[in-house]
Image (tube, rainbow, N blue to C red; front, top):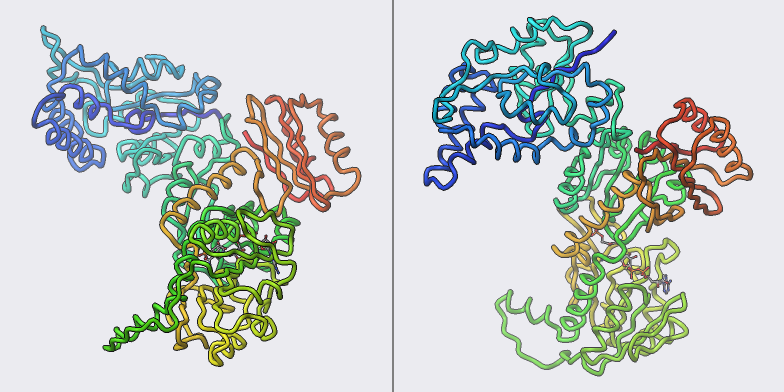
Length: 627
Ligand SMILES: NC(=O)C1=CN([C@@H]2O[C@H](COP(=O)(O)OP(=O)(O)OC[C@H]3O[C@@H](n4cnc5c(N)ncnc54)[C@H](O)[C@@H]3O)[C@@H](O)[C@H]2O)C=CC1
Ligand SMILES: O=C(O)C(=O)COP(=O)(O)O
């Protein structure tokens, strides 16, 4: 059956209501401009929602506008700049279906015709009102004989057209829906890209947040392979709101949850989710990954990634990104503060005053200048701390399992024991590898200097807590600062630890990376990685996946094929492509011992059956087409 597409103009084809824009032009320089514009907008909305008659809304607005013929040209110029985003990117549809597209609008032909002409919609398929002018060119009213000037005029207009085939109406307002209600149109798509009108959306056969969605559900030519609004992103653990903004502005459907979810709840919630965003608390287990039927990406909005089954995710073609540098400085600054606070016994002195006691003393209060700082784990955090600590006059020693270049005058220790024996303060910045469990236990604590301090800003399981409590109680250690714990709660609330109520022990709730700056930076960094992968296939900086930087795809379709890295698979893929005579513009491959990721850019015209065949190749893990 043939289809006819009837578009509304204002707030559908353009992002704005044209009469509002006209008001901005005609009222420029007037003191009461803002008040009148507000009034016009109110009247517009009342008319659109059907709360006052349309004729009345139009009359009242024209009167307030005080417009002139010469205002129309700048108006058209401004409207040209305000074509809806997804309309402007889908010209192909307007070219290929030119004969089947109509505009029915309660706006005015004087400005609609020139705009939609550029989208191949000729005047004769534009149905709208026309202005009336006086001799001086002032707009005094409109042609009241036009059905579109009257209430529910769109119904009459469409009825008179007597279109053949399935008639689909695409619009943002109730006046568009009524054509469907009256039985003259077959389907109504509520177009919400620019404005979401509850009444229209409630009555729609389908809500189209953009034209991509409309074209997708109707299987029409489109600029995007998959509408972004269909890509669901679930962000847990209170990630910064800027992440929500970044991802929703790119068109994705984003849901925010303030806390972490336990395995069973995540298993339920992950269904249908394409991108999962977490921080250090949420465990992405094998069971979670098995339940994830649509998952493409896990974004760790933090540094650590061992809460995710990285290997299993890779086998399932799920790419993991993190933010390896965004909170580094925050951890370093906290470490510096804690070194000073511990060495000056600030917490005991402060607690005494909170308890009503004045206790001025120099005992157990020392400068950090000239003291030895032992940094365990000389990675991004360890190195930056090294530089700052040295600038404040500390002597830095470090120990790392990997060969690491010493910064400044830092001295490398060959063994952990060497470092523990020489340090006045030991600070842990090793990674979250499970092999680091109980890295600091009774034996290591015994190897530390008597009266030394321990700081742990890495992971809770790295320190044997009962052993640490023993060392603090016995006086072996003079204090500690602990930010991370073997068991941490999923959300804020009660928390117990054996470290409570010990003298000169700073306890913080895993806030090493929790600064406004770090969280804000992460909210840009990780979403950019997510968008790069979804929009282009790029895996640069992925932590569990072959990394590949891809050129921008131009005038091509992109096939993304993730497969098990077994002998012969590339030959198989290329055999299929050859058998369909595909015109390959570029091909890129990146592999690791287990997984291969091949990206092929192809000329847009091809037999779509090739897709099915590529998906069916044995050892295929995931396949996506991008355009
Ligand atoms: N408290 C908090 O809020 C935060 C905690 N972190 C933790 O800090 C850790 C370190 O972060 P980055 O410096 O960015 O990581 P990184 O990967 O750059 O550095 C870690 C270093 O530790 C070394 N290492 C690992 N195991 C070791 C061992 N057993 N002995 C000696 N060296 C060892 C590694 O070779 C590496 O050089 C993260 O993995 C994370 O667990 C990170 C950010 C915030
Ligand atoms: O970045 C990390 O690895 C951290 O430990 C910080 O984690 P968070 O984002 O505070 O859950």
